[in-house]
Length: 542
Image (cartoon, rainbow, N blue to C red; front, side, top):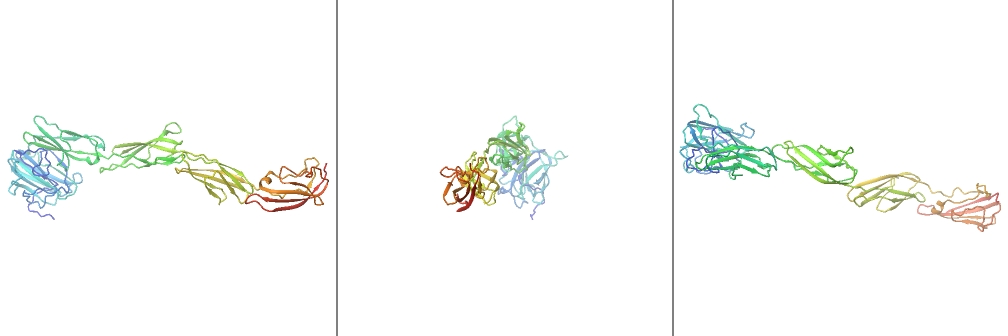
């Protein structure tokens, strides 16, 4: 709890020195010390951010009721009309609602400001003081006389971010005094603006004398941001938002005045998006990566996308979604534009080259070999990037193969129709596949050998010939013997059939003959050591 030695009232983050100026030059005041007080003018409402962790008042003065003097600001005033001057002050972090503890001490009257800071800020020169815990204070300067100066020190006891708002509360009332407002400054700006725009601070130009002008971004009164009545700042950043003080000094007589203007600089979106590459025919899930940050409540409010091509009716392909999904019609490079606007109308845009990759084009053919073995030929074509992996699935639930081979063989367990897929992934990660039905047939054996041959030219049972597939799938020998065991015919090819003619070219007589078939299937699945015997009757030979 704060101790109280005097029951005055005033509480803020400043020290205000109200002084009758006469011999003290107040050029480029900062308000941070007694020697650099800011001017106070009747009829002006002062509103500025209080200092936080900005030090304490300088040693030397008698601070009367103040138990501490954190975050000081000094103001001065010179009395023009005699009478009671009352100054009402509020410490607030919520508009005008009192929230923050501020304190004050007021000194005077002084005939001039010369040397008042060294030895004249005493208990005997204390006009009013308050160290209360309240967020509002009222300074009473009774019987102020024309020409006198007063100093007012305001402190931000709360040491929390807030604004201090104060003005003469009894201005214009009967018996009220007023301050000398020989200089009446006005401050304005071209805001609100967006980050990166040009900020123009406009102060009133004085005439009829020599004046100095200084602009300060509060609470820093130590370093001016400009020293002309109009200041142009470009480019701008959001940290330049805040209350600006415009301080005007009359070099000839020391008169001064301060006015304030609030600058709002909204954050500008920094537009961005991903991804920048996609595979053809794949839908793109665009992700808005825009950043936007300020302390003024800026948010992204609207978006516009241009995808760099026309839609199917000839209009530009666009979207107003934040994160749209889009499919590009053809492979190639597209200029994708993206615009973002905040809820305060601040905009940014970006155009990036977007690549749609031509994917691999899988294709294959197949050829039946022997004993359910199939030879697959990879006919696939490369897209924009080389193949990284080639994967076969032979459709029987177990058969797969991975490899770049152009020829791949696979043996099925049984004849059937199988759905075979070929999937290709390129080095960019694009995947394509194709599916084809493969009809696997059984290799014929030697089960249907004839037992009667009538080579009479009527095209019925005239001869016996093996199939070409027997030549491809077997090494075989078919021999015919007469009843005495003599070999009369032999063949190992489908091009040479048995027509009732001996191996020497003579016609065989009608009768019963005997045959022997021996065969070996070709390949790992072929049946081995086949041996069959039987008889064949020749009848009706010409």
